Figure 1 (cartoon, rainbow, N blue to C red):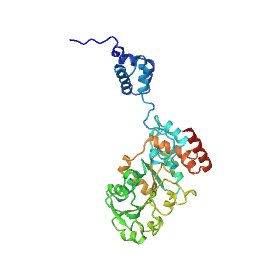
Figure 2: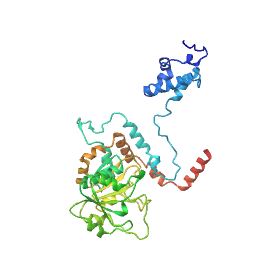
Figure 3: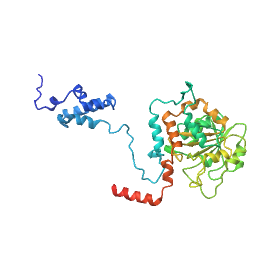
Figure 4: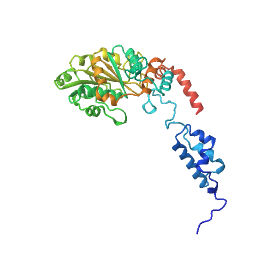
Length: 355
């Protein structure tokens, strides 16, 4: 026996999917959102009417309300933490010029095409030329997708199957539990730890260096500090031992800054004799997430041609953001570091009043 559906049953008033997709507002949404996304919203709204949770007269509005509010799940936030370069908040906020560059690069671009000759050219040549000009002490520069990747490429290219001489006081752990010693071992290199947690001397390095040494690694322990009975060895002293010295300065400071007298910089490490320096682009440089390699021409060129470099390659949006960062005026990071405390205090009071 077939059940009789009451005439007041809300299921009778549910418009079909075809009818709803023909509604002007919903048809317009198909020009913005993927068809499966719109169909999910339509089916959800139909089910709401069937169960009586929503009224058929407002089903179009119900469909539109179920569409994504923005094209990404990432939400813009106010950084009121007091930490200028906050990892969990996306680190550096891009400058207006960098944002404009990203928007321009969103379509087809000549990222590795020479429009004058019709032939292939170096990928992201404009961005890399600007970066090289900003680090005149470097014979060559290269970029990869983050700071850890830069260190990975440097150690792999110089020391895979050989030894990396590294002070125990610099065996750091970075964000989310990743330990740089584990990253170095993943390259196929063997760690040769020297010194102690708080004291490492030049003699410790000298005793460890030998025919099996691929490189000497010096890492800036930027997220912790050892005080008291301590000693460490400078880049200049390490450079005199013979093997190439890889220096990870971390923050991406290109040159000395009076505001940050204790922060190592790329230019300083190169002048001291480093073969290659690695750093992040989304910290003090104020650019997009990427890893910088700067150093001797023969070293950087060899790393650039290493098979691993292809897997670590950056995309056109990153290259555009880097170029915009270097072309533009002061970055938001630089402005924040130099902000007047009185202006910050007034901003905090006004924000507190609003929330």
